[in-house]
Image 1 (tube, rainbow over the protein chains, first blue to last red):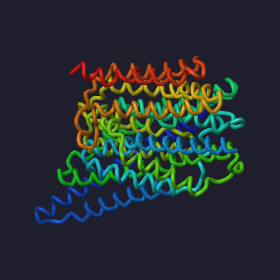
Image 2: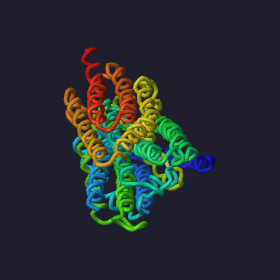
Image 3: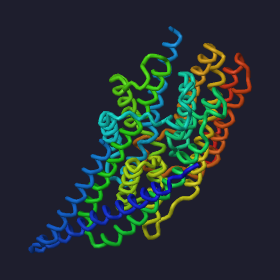
Amino acid sequence: MKIDWAALGSVFGVSLSATVALVALFTLGLVGLSKHETATEQGGTATVARGGAYACFALCGLAVVYAIYLIVS
Amino acid sequence: MEHITLLLGIVIITALVFDFTNGFHDTANAMATTISTGALKPKTAVAMSAVLNLVGAFMSVEVAKTISKGLVNEEGIQPEVIFAALVGAILWNLVTWLVGLPSSSSHALMGGLIGAAVASAGLGAVNGSVVVTKVLIPAVAAPIVAGVAAMLAARLTYKLGGKVGGKTSTKGYRAGQIASAGLVSLAHGTNDAQKTMGIITLALVAGGALESGANPPVWVIVSAGMAIATGTYLGGWRIIRTMGSGLTDLQPQQGFAAQTSAASVILASSSLGFSLSTTHACSGAVMGAGLGRKGGVVRWSTATRMFIAWGLTLPAAALVGAGAEMVMRTGNIGVAAVVVFLVASCAAIWFISRRQVVDHHNVTEPAPAAAEAPGVVTTAMAAVTVPPIAAAGTTAAVTDEDLKATIPAAAPAPAAPAAAV
């Protein structure tokens, strides 16, 4: 009997880091968006926060596209 | 030849029924958290999942022939063996659905195949070490991997996102959950619909209707895709309720963390070559996310019942598969007996389920979890103990014994909640 510990370990590592990274990115995006919205309500702007938020969401979108690519291939 | 054609027809229809129960059973994996956190309305969620399952079924042309590869020696697989395996898998899927527990459809199918192969060709037909590496270790590893990832992710999103405004948070986590649940649905369509296509193709090859190594015909792809999508749309609401609100109470943040973890684990495992069960990964992710919130609790009594069901999946399906195979060896009468047994059991389970209906109206209400506890063990035990009777009996008596054994065996499940209320 041969258990492929390396494969199991890499599945563990990859899933863990992908999940944590994606959730962190997404949450940061929400934080940025929220900051921007608060700023506009008070009549100001928060361009950096908004740009950062969109960058985070774009990266999450890329991850989704890559996931679909993985499913198809 | 006519006999073979009829048998093949039965096998194909049974495979599609299995595909249907598979979709039915696994809607919860993709959509339970989305429904329980209110990100999507129940009907919308299952409709979306059904469409994505259908799309997924057509997306990949690679045939999933892996269901039997290595686990059972493929030589000498007869249509009867495949049919017996499917009977075991369908019954186990329906029994676990009745008691509302998520369990792996793939394990049920593998169990059925193992049981039927052993009954047909002896113990040598099964590769024991493959059972350990392909079934047991993944079953333990999947919930741990997904659970740890979901727990850390949930903690992180609470920590980082503490200052996010209410409106942004609601809208954001909603979108995030829908996206990750969509990915899980899509992956499920590609994996599980392909499995049925592989089974039907295997049966066609075994029955001599297709050449060995042939690709699945178009009608097989279409019908398998439709069967899984229909099953998904009808939704196994009992299992959705257990996963969405029975195991733990989820907030949108946790739902998002859980689904993202489930999607990552499924995709990572399938592309890195260490296949993990979708159901186990999703259940583990839900529990992990439950623990990731301060003050979050996992209802371990429900979780324990689920673990017991996981442990029983393979042996129970194997016993039913073996029993069915032994009965069918007696020829046409045996095949007819098994068909009658299958249809009668499905009907019995459905009628029992009508006594306490769970559908999209009451899916988010809490389940009477404690009251069901005696039911699961009784029913599971009953499912395990039925086949030996079938195996021990002689041909003529078997049909009646099977039927008699099924109905009282499953009856305690709904009776228990009634008594507790």
